[in-house]
Image 1 (cartoon, one colour):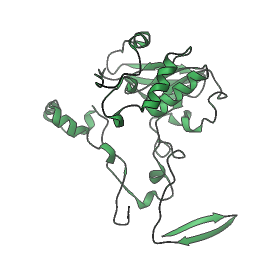
Image 2 (cartoon, helix red, strand yellow):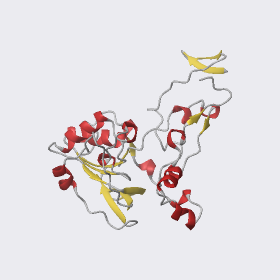
Image 3 (cartoon, helix red, strand yellow):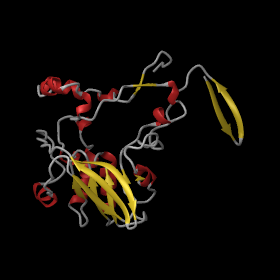
Image 4 (spheres, helix red, strand yellow):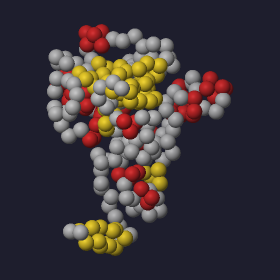
Length: 258
């Protein structure tokens, strides 16, 4: 491998048999290469916020309800700022025995504290954002209601919201597919996670990537009506959701010694 570097303004080339790529994820937000939806470029990605306390505005729309979205919501709440979280999945309701499929315990505790505080975030799901537009008064976030999903929870772990908090947060979802708009004077906060340096960094052409799968519950991953009907079978449905940790992830290649 030839590794081209610049040190003190001087270009140089390092030649090596092996390269360990450890550039992380934080500088490579998801959507930087392909916008998640029209108008995504109008949003502020959460990774670019240097200080939640001094970030301009006091009432925000947060797009995304997983780790990044809950981090933004808890920080805004701690700073006394209002926010509405718009998420396709109510991750704050997901409580299982598998820690890889739900919010981290630390994140869960932070959002518990935020919801019990004086400026609790408003948590809305299932809502999938499909566009952001700018108008004379600020920004318009357009979303579409999804299918309402009940999360049973795990035997040994508790949901983020208490029964009283859940009741206070309760919003009756509209019919699946119905569109709704949210208006905000400042750019919405896009909390869609990170694509990672393997996919967007200088070595992206040296990796192969797992084939992405269609979003869970979409018709794009089913070929015909018979297959959709067959997907009602639990095992077959689980197969169709596939992808797992290989979904869009860097794969081993003949040049990869890891």
